[in-house]
Length: 289
Ligand SMILES: [Zn+2]
Image 1 (cartoon, protein in one colour):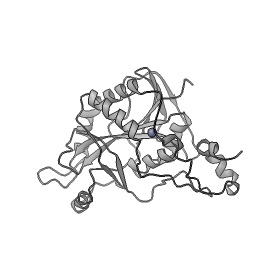
Image 2: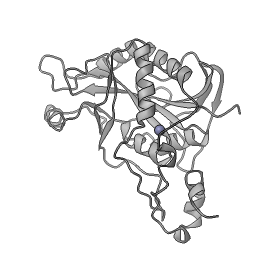
Image 3: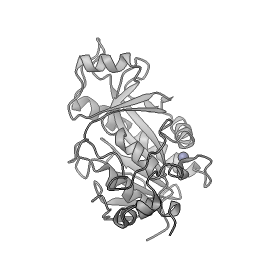
Image 4: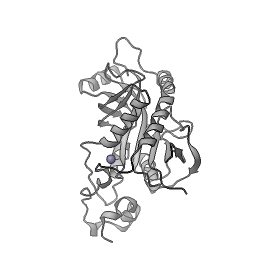
């Protein structure tokens, strides 16, 4: 295999492949948490090695509740990636975040149920900090790239993740607005938190495709609306990622790569060998041999 990817991209609805990659290599991976949504595509983009993973699988066969988020993040970690850009569609809960715009949120509200949301289980307990759930440094670099690509982009906002797969009712949508939520989607959680547990920088490029269902002068969201807006934005997403890859500095100044330093609470001598083995990629640097 070539050198490790400097950037990983998880493509959501509408972004199923990454154009412009050269020296492509496709890898099938098996993680301790199962298979990722699709084979990971490695390739060169603007002179950097990047990894691309289609979150919903090839042909969009995996629903938001069925995505194996743990296997996806773990697979990218296995490849050595330590920066992840999540590309996703979202509905807007604010008038000024209009369809066609891009939002790079700085806060997350997890409103999902019943998804496997942590790598830590089976006798190994860890509590990672998630006050600031996305990497501010990578988010800023992504913001600059989208600006340079010519997108209308908003820096900041709260992204609520609902379970889906159905869209919201009007009552739900207006409650989320009253809570101060900015955008709404179905996949940011638990992906963002798993990336934190895996000590990877994670930033979100959310494409506003609609006004959800609260807007009185707009039609309620439909799949057709989401796909139409997203297809129009695909070129912008790819251009932004090319610019980001080109400008990505080698050094990092954030705290993402030691998120687990004070998070593991289980006494080292009580960690079962099977749990230690399963998560060795994430935890071995913190445990005595
Ligand atoms: Zn970071």
